[in-house]
Picture 1 (cartoon, rainbow over the protein chains, first blue to last red):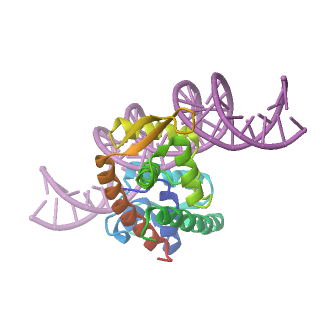
Picture 2 (cartoon, chains in turn orange, green, purple, yellow):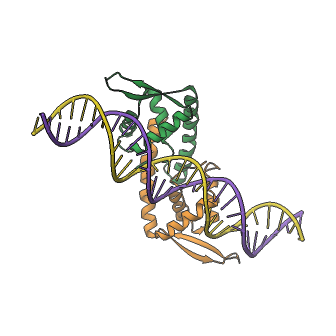
Picture 3 (cartoon, rainbow over the protein chains, first blue to last red):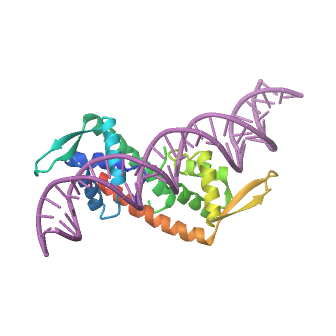
Length: 103
Length: 103
DNA sequence: ATCCTATGCATAGGATTCCGAGGTAACCAA
DNA sequence: TTGGTTACCTCGGAATCCTATGCATAGGAT
């Protein structure tokens, strides 16, 4: 089960904590939501590429473990976007929660 | 600004409060969210028809104001679905809120 | 009387988001 | 050497939403 529209924000949040690679980002989201959120690879990679195109994240080669992986870090623009996304999430989720009760 | 995926649930919630017609449902959602949520007619009507196809709402003709309007009421199945949707919303919104901070 | 706005319903076209299914390849343990 | 996990990627297709457009009526303003 997932929340449409929140993936880019969740990716940016993961990269603020630690620059890392796509597969690990997906794991991280799943772990930190205790399995509730579970974005698939077919969703994650396109979203990641899009964020890179938009300049919100940057990628680089990493060979720390001997094996080449494409890692990502958040950019300054990405941090600003994340801040706006957080605020928007708060506003929208509050609005829905109020309507659905149990505020 | 809107929240993808929440519209059917918000429609069902509106119809639990009061059976009414499409246009009024859209107004209701906008008013109760203080303008934050604002689903357009091109979104609302197809969603409403889909709910009817699925048997979650029923429609009937209303001429109370002298003018014919198509009104909707929630069905028993619709109420059950709404209960599940509420629970799902709570779970998902909590998951995202925890990750994004400010729980 | 006429026009404008709000009401009220509806559809078409396009964008975005997501998933399932599939492919490729490296690494490690049994 | 076989299978499981890690790691990356792409291609449909489905679902959701918006914009734009069309039609029609009611009520108030000019």
